[in-house]
Image (cartoon, rainbow, N blue to C red; front, side, top):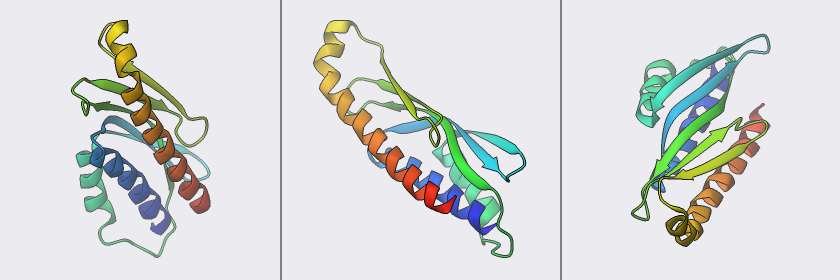
Length: 138
């Protein structure tokens, strides 16, 4: 299960990177693909993913290849700039889409758009790096 452990750890590290930048991912859906079928697992947050990794991949069984793990979608929230912004990412490894949302009026959101765009770009860059590494392992 060496490939499965590596690709799962790559996804886990992606979410830990977002968390270090004060973007907390929730409602995470991960796809386990074995060239025949897809198996999806939902996680509540990064801590649940970390627990799954610790229980299933420590120590790593390097005798079998395992499934290819990819991120299907996630929801993230951030309150870095003293207002809450949500990010919904879908189809991360194939046709990535990121939608932002905020619960304030248009005037406040217009003033805060530069901060939202900054975090959105951070997520887009992180996804691009994730997909590049994931494609190499694929």
